[in-house]
Length: 84
Image (cartoon, rainbow, N blue to C red):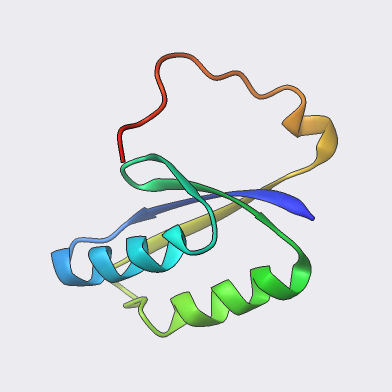
């Protein structure tokens, strides 16, 4: 299991909502366009495949940042948790 930080920039309101709704089923929203998801390899591949069907190449941007246990222990969080 790894923690993935997943960020996106989606110009279409409709597509952005669909992607956010999908990500909410896999992790926790920590900013408006940032999710943290703890996933094993199978779930990560499943999520990528499902996102691929909603993603519009040339318009959208989605980034996946895997965090190792070593890196995870160095994460700092400032401020209040987001309101969902």
